[in-house]
Image (tube, rainbow, N blue to C red; front, side):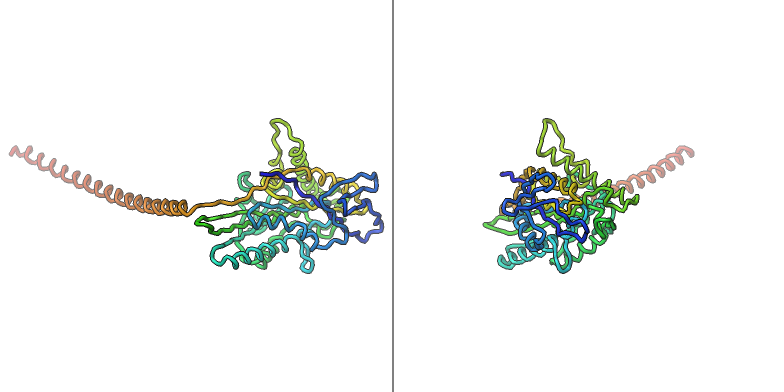
Length: 394
């Protein structure tokens, strides 16, 4: 099984309406290199999208990951960057300018419905969705009333509500209702700054038969909109926002530590996935079983040069992470299916016999108790008769 590096692309946010709009970066789309104008340091990406890049262009680039998920391989797409750099716009977008999540959902349903149509009754699929948010290092289920849940290390979605969906419209309506509960706040960088990490997961199960064998594939697509890294100078400096920023930065710091541990392994080293809810959820996506693309969003204004450097350093490190994506396919022969069906049938019969045996034991127990009771009565009467004869010496 071949390893492949995490794919990292940079998207430059268009300039905001600020008085100081001097840029701190230069880009070269041909070589995919970003150069900091402050010190001429260069950062090589897999792809660089300029300020005028459209949502369609971004989605076209990540389509291969979504196609892999449709074909039974786990995939992850997540957006990273400072507050106000355009992560939520990239991942979710707006009604008139859709982001990756709604476009991916539509692509998946179109592809699977087309395959189902072409194969007639020989292909079936099910899609379910979940939506979580990590807020101040606690995980909440956005599809279950924003209820607080625990994330098990064995199965990150075990305690999350999974909603089966039958169309892209139905899926998006459900997700939109959930994402409305996501924590946002007004900061100096953004009117509605995300104060939590949002993780949307689609789970696909496909089944088809070929040459008397059942082919079953189960794959997941994780789409993650991270909360933005920030310093106190970019918040409104109230106590709640400072607490939120502290937790956001802590989880992103742990994310960075996990990545450094993966690319610089040491003997007997334990990668600190468990140190943060975020890294627990992204465990398979970083150094595990997944095809992963990271979109780093960068604000080019020189006012945010320090944040741009931090984001680009993260990009360079995560680009070194290698994943091993494995096809999640389970093939079962017709003979095995027949044997499994027979085992289930015999198991059912065995359960029925156990129930009947239990009933019989219960009846026998009641009969036994009745016999003992009657014997006691007989014994009592025998004693009375014996006493009578003894008394009258008959």
